[in-house]
Amino acid sequence: MKKIFKSLPRLLGQMAIVAAVLIGFQVVTGGMWLFGLPELDQVESVSIAYPQVTEEVKIVTGEEDKELALKLTGFLKYNLFQKAADGQQPLIIITYHLQDGTDRNIAANGTTVWWKDKAYALKDPDIFVNLTEGLFFLAEVQTR
Image (cartoon, rainbow, N blue to C red):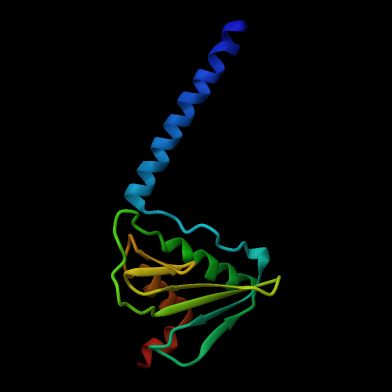
């Protein structure tokens, strides 16, 4: 029994090293996640703007639409080792209006995401813009 307790810290240390390597591999190959996004129960409503397509700002308050808008940010993984291109403008701007009265903004174009006043190069270009177009601006894009 003593041997088990003596070897337990070593086993836990090895498991931590393996976990760190796996997470590092995932970040390098799949991209880094955005941290600090609000939880669904914190969001009162979501505003989605696509100024190049329409002047109208979509405001969603339904639970399913708010959840969809939050899940879209999962496609905004960024490349840690690539710098975002300078001089670009966002195509889509999503504002999360929180229960406490504050707002959190996230903006993106095909190659860059802006979060917490920093620009990051997207790991998978255009996916976020295409999905947002299809989910929230399909009619406007088709009439363009």
